[in-house]
Each structure stands twice: as structure tokens, then as C-alpha cells.
Length: 259
Image (cartoon, rainbow, N blue to C red):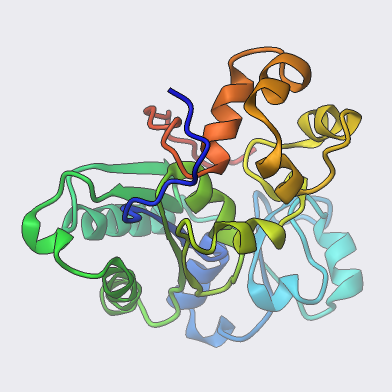
């Protein structure tokens, strides 16, 4: 059954995203690097690609895929470090352990982000405000891993919304999306900022006059199914945007390899 209304149930899906994970872990391990621009690379040569950068580097223009040589033109005092997977695995396991204290229904989406489903957790946990639990998880990361650790927490009614909003207030943000602020939240996002809408799907939407996230939200399900996506995917997008769960499928864990 297709729902035309927004999902008004209590938001019980939480997304946790460690901010600039690899760079932040290195800053935690090496206090002298805190507050300094840091880049993580596969190997220490000037032509190697940057895997991730600290926020201090990002605000100066350093980005994923840039070579160290290019980055140092922008930021001469950039510190480039070779990746250390053992450290990142340790943080991954700590994060997973913390999440499991709140629900057995957790999914690690990658080495630095996970989802907690609170629908089937204990009454004690469900009786708490999830905003409070989100703040508690932030503090536990600092207490159990280190004071340099920061994460974004988003709480909503489905996995699409928590993932889409994960970048809204980085670093160290906490957002709650409900049926009451859904339109306001989507209004601040470009089409290609929506999880699953890259250039190809954006072009499909543009071809029928849909250029904003709110226009996408307001488009009839039949138009999305028959004209835009030409499949049941149109119905799924219609529901997904309204906060209904259509993506509760297990995912293979993605990791960052050396290459």
C-alpha cells in the first residue's frame, strides 16, 4: 500500500557517522596533530591519492582523491600519514560494541558508520529519548576511545533519511527528522545530496521538470513509477521520501582497502 502522508511514527532509526574517521583516529593517537591539517594516504609519495582528510584540512580545500602534491600547494603544512588499518579496526569494534548496548539490531554500513534500529530493543531503552541516547553515544566515544573522537548522529523514521541527513551539521551534529520538519530538512538539500540520487537519476528527474528535493517529494507516485523510473522504483522513492521504510535490507560491509 502506498502512503500519501508523511510517516508520523516516532523516529526509531539512528545513524552514527564518525567524522573524518581515519584522520581523527590519527589525531587521537598523536595529540601533536590535533588542530592541524592531516591527510591519510595509501603510501607516502607526493603523487598518491588522499583517502580522507581532517576537518582542518577540508576547510582549506583538501579533498578526497586529490594528490598529496596538489594538496600541499593549497596547504603547505599538511601532514600526510600512511593509513594504519589496525587502529581503524579497533575503533570500528569499539563503535560496534557501544551500539550493541542499545539494541541487538545494528548494521555497520562501513568501517566508520552504523545504524541502530530501536524498534525491537528493551522497554528501558525505548523509554528514553533517543536524542539523549545520541548524546550519550557521543560522550562514550570520547570516554572509551578518546577525546578527539566526534560523530554525527541522525534520528529519523527510515534509513534513507538518516543517511541523507548525516552530512547536514558536520562535524559533531545531532539531528532529528520527523514528519513535522521533513519538508524543512529536504528543502536545504540539492537533489544530488539525496542518498541514491547521483547524476544519472538527477538527469531523469530534471527531464520531467523536477529540479529540487521538495519538487521530488511532491511528485505523484504514478509519475515517478511510469515516467521517471519506469519501474516500481518510482513507488519506492515516493515512500522513501515520506519517511516510510523500504530499505531495511542487509548490506555487505564496505571497507577501505590500501589501493
